[in-house]
Image 1 (cartoon, one colour):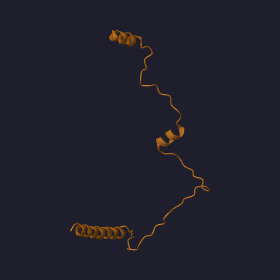
Image 2: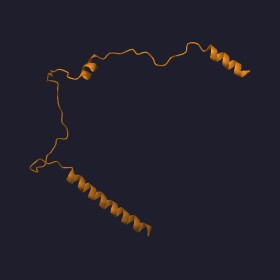
Image 3: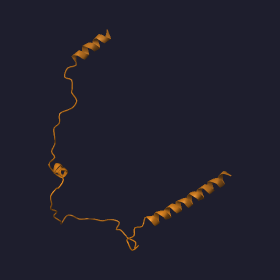
Image 4: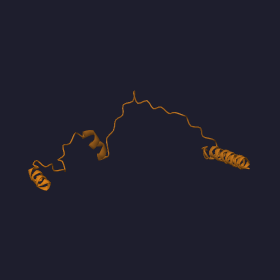
Length: 95
């Protein structure tokens, strides 16, 4: 009895997988205005080796990245130089 339920459930799962796969193929295709199928290359390579690009940076973020150098910031954590008071208190707690 259990085996029949498993087989029926497996058949339903296979039918669902086939239907979803078919929808993926149908809706995954691009067409232009006339309905013609558009095919894309699998890989597009653009070679900038022989091209000299000239222009101006219009956003300040680009100039910031180009002129950015190592900045020295002050630490927000104040480190204690002397722990004598805490040491004396801890000795008093031991007695």
